[in-house]
Image (cartoon, rainbow, N blue to C red; front, side, top):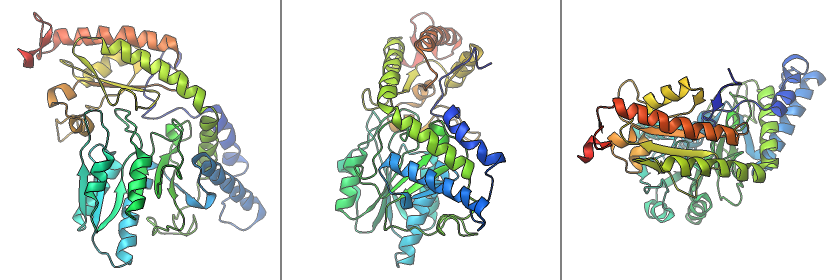
Length: 399
């Protein structure tokens, strides 16, 4: 199947790299000791775990003791927001104010909603039509009781990269803690926690060639958030649960490999991405979503008027192309993606979204195929669409 499949959904997940898999395998069958045990066999696992921690830290310009392994980005996001709230409560601030953006991942937005129910106030900042957060709006939203700012580094649907260093400088000047969800950024663009002025940063291994089920939260010293998960006191008492040594080792190996080859891979993917953008933006009633320049190297996202995103995905799947749509509906709602609505797209247009996210195995031939199949699928679906006028070849809402 993979030989004939074009995988263009790397923002959803990636294959484990050979480098990561090779690093992991001994820890399943040979070096499988529990790192919390005291005997030498187990302590060898502890050594490998700490080497992985140091490797991840080096890739972020952090210190090893500032890296805490988690089960992934969602846990890290939850820990960042809920941990800051609990820390402030322990200091006597039972409620407070949190600033985030309208296009965050649901791991942030739903956690913010949870904290609202606990008495916290949340300001959800708007973004412009390209999906950018205005740093001046962040500064204007800061109040005396603001305890945390959380803005994602790069958006998972439209690929827009935020001015994290500028926002971080504002947060630091106002002595407000700053968290960034960097799940889509780490391993894909340069990430430097010091240059970015962040106190907390979330990442997830499976987004850059590591395994699923492993991530990390960077926590700038001397900040120490209360534990989100109670138990045996692993991760210096901050995150209990038997350490996932194979996962940590695999994630670290994948991240180092990605960072080592970042300049050339960014250039290669950006060129492929720009071919997709040029080709698909030329279709009638097709628009690029996200910033035209400040975007992830491999991500090209569009809306096609008069087309349902889900139908487009199924049509492409039949042609062997794996992609994603921001318009996937929940069982309880017909609303399209909150990200597309936040950048100002009307519901009818936002339903026709397509995200193509390229990765290491994608080639120029893949792009050629996508540029052939997507226009054909769009034309086919429009001919069947009740919101597309066949005579004038435009959406019915323009008539």
